[in-house]
Amino acid sequence: MKPLKTKVSITLDTDIIDLIKELAEKDDRSFSQYINLVLKEHLKENKDIQK
Image (cartoon, rainbow, N blue to C red; front, side, top):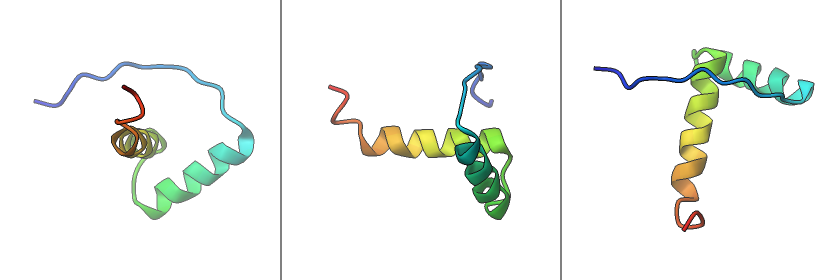
């Protein structure tokens, strides 16, 4: 079963949105899927900092 997701609203700079859309398209992912992927990778790489 897929994990549950929660809808959130955030404000991003236009240039960031444009870049994410471009990268998501190149990776054949939706905007939301790509943001989720990037955030997961960032958190995984920085998990030691969180403690």
